[in-house]
Length: 329
Ligand code: 13P
Ligand code: SF4
Image (cartoon, rainbow, N blue to C red; front, top):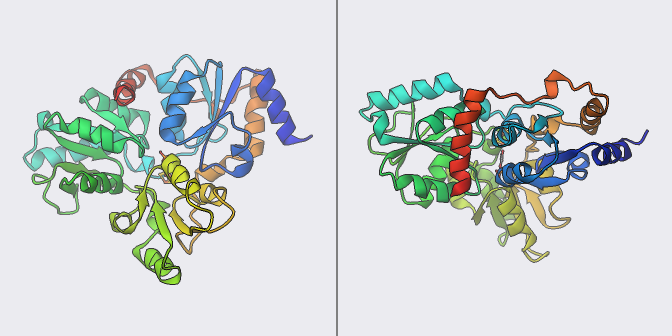
């Protein structure tokens, strides 16, 4: 049996849209009907009219589709949880709010914004407090909008993204629990991070610049602020792809984001900005066999509970509010 042909057959025969994030393995990515960054995937998956969405990515992405389109059956061949999203749950969210309150900032003066890399339950907490979701491609716009409230922004869970966008907006940031002064900050960040993007260091940038003086450095905003400060370009996965594809082929560029995506970008003059292979273990979990098994379970009317995305109605209600606020902007 040819797995690829079987997947193509099943997709056609069943009412399925196969969705994949840029970080997926090549063999999975190539078969997807929809590909994109987190924002594009949330929007496009919402717009499909197919009954089943089979989502190859990490848990929060499948959950976002379910929250925006509860009538759809959303399946994930592997419900792999983004390590950063796992760093915050409702309890930690509340605990951080208490610390902020104890620093003399009451909830009425706080507007929460959550990076899309968070669970639906955390998004719901944010939605209930009047806040919204952002992604790496629209964070600038969303934070600017949030600031119109004249409240302090509580940014969760990625401290790097919060710090990077605070800098680009000429604002002060602080991180809960690291001893920085929360009262003086415009953006108060939760102390979460992406272990994959922490692999790119100042030394890596220096190494490449010394080796190839004309090289450009392009990184994702989940990288450390010191690395982003040194880069020639900082952008979401889609923005990085556009930037790199538009460069002349002879232009060398070192890229600070996940391996699968960088590897398929261009044949020549593209380097990984790290001596360690920056693979996202959870994004890499989904295999072609997993996709096939999931599609076959639809055909056989034998869907496994383990692949089915379920979000309770209360969470859907408020997480949707937070996501819709972002989509409106
Ligand atoms: P994008 O929103 O840029 O696709 O990023 C998602 C992600 O998880 C990056 O690590
Ligand atoms: Fe999460 Fe980092 Fe993987 Fe992106 S690269 S999905 S932030 S663990």
